[in-house]
Amino acid sequence: MYRTHYCNDIREKDIGQKVELCGWVDTIRDHGGVIFVDLRDQTGITQTVVHDETMLAGVNKECVITVSGTVSERDSETVNEKLDTGRVELVVESLTLLGKCKNMLPFDVSDSRSTREDVRLKYRYLDLRSQRLHNNIVLRSHVIRTMRRCMEEKDFLEIQTPILTASSPEGARDFLVPSRKHKGKFYALPQAPQQFKQLLMVSGFDRYFQIAPCFRDEDARQDRSPGEFYQLDFEMAFATQEDVLQVCEDVIYDVFKTYSTKKISDKPFRRITFKDAMMQFGTDKPDLRNPLRIFDLTDFFAKVDFPLFKGKPVRGIVADCFGQSRKFFEDSLKFATSIGMKGLGYLTLTDGEFKGPIAKFLTPEQKEEITALSGIRANETLFFICDAPSIVNREAGEIRTWLGENLGIIDQDSYEFCYVVDFPMFEIDPSTGKTVFTHNPFSMPQGGLEALETKAPTEVLAYQYDLVCNGIELASGAVRNHDVEIMRKAFAIAGYTEDELESRFTALYTAFQYGAPPHAGMAPGVDRIIMLLAGEESIRDVIAFPLNGNAQDLLLGAPSEVTEQQLLEANIRIRD
Image 1: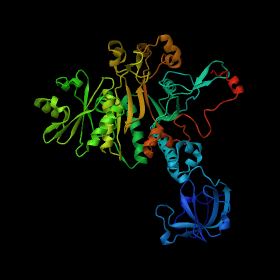
Image 2: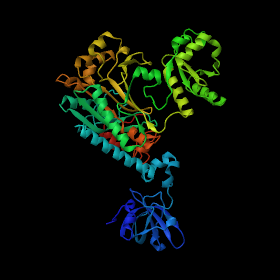
Image 3: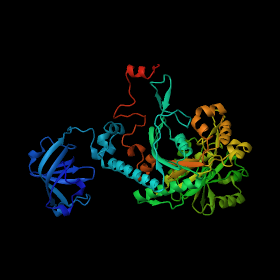
Image 4: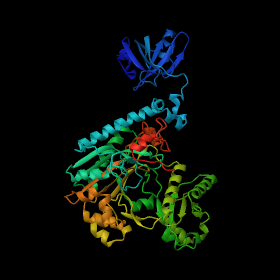
């Protein structure tokens, strides 16, 4: 037996007891005649005291040892209130070296955060020993356990779906796996269990969930891991949009309430239409911690003799910039030009008068009108964003975020949730001019077949919805299209023939002809939830063994070359 206790178990109640501990050497401090060794395991740290230095022969930081001895009370002047075990120590009577460690470590485990990420990922097993990352992985385990408990309490069945499946167009590149037995054919790793979970509904399983691995060959971002990520995937038969939102809301609220002390949005979470989100926040992922709002001034400037705004949409944002230096406004202009804007106009209301480059173009009546429209008050500044219809909302959203961050008005101690609903079913691809699905091709259009037949494609709304928290999309879902006739029409609008629909989605297309119930679902992203709860800026810091930003595994060396024999068996030839 290596231990009788974990390191963090030792307390004053154990004084005088003989115990055995094991773990990694965190620090060694030689005080001349007495040596203090901090011993670390998964639970925490205990200070041990070694009087015989020969016990430490060959022992250095990050070695694995087991020690036995007697628990003793620390002297009052050496009590460490930062440690749970800070009032006691273990006087070592025997020590065994279990695992040697090189003297020269690639980096200091306790300070791994200051190390370059490529080095940390190459020696990830050392990086994961740091308290911060270790806590993140423990948090991840606990959160997933809570998710499972919540879903089981709601009578969902956990069902696993295949990893090797067929390639299907779901918005990102597939990872392809060559078949050895079927020459020239490939499996694909699932971008999501989308078709399988819908087939489970057709199969008569009323409520399904799983912690599902999803695979997409897409570029990395701070909140997106390349290659692989995990979702709390769930689907419900005989369910409406509100049924799904209620389940998601209950689970997410429970998770955040359990694992955070920050303020959390009250239930029910706010619902914002896609149209309102784009107008008021400039994005379909609004950060509600930022109190600034965007409003439309297009009609107002249509009456103003200001050539730069003529014939274009105009957005406004009012912010309290009182006391800001001239450099603040210069920096705001620099940011605006960095995102492609030609400039950033503004007016400041000072002593009852508007000041700024646009003021001279406004009549007294127009100044009164814009005051009423914008709600601007004394010493506040009204910023103007004007550009092409396709980009003006996005630019206004980025200006809103820049102002919120640089004015320090974003509440860092809260989680603000909302649902974005009523997404358009279709959009026009700017590169091809063709009509394409905006979200999920298996979504139910609002108004059903009649809407598809009577409305312009871009006017059709879908029962699609996203969960957003602090400007990050945490979940996406939809009421599914379970009607073959509606499916044919929707895919035809997106340019698919019925033969293409049947060949590319054979299972669903056929299954829906054998009695499919109405069904709906959603998939909160596990990695992003952990990232928010842990307060991390990079999603890689909440994943045990992530790929780097270039989709490489620096620890095991993937992707790697394979042998000619392996290529031959997979019927693959490498082309230059």
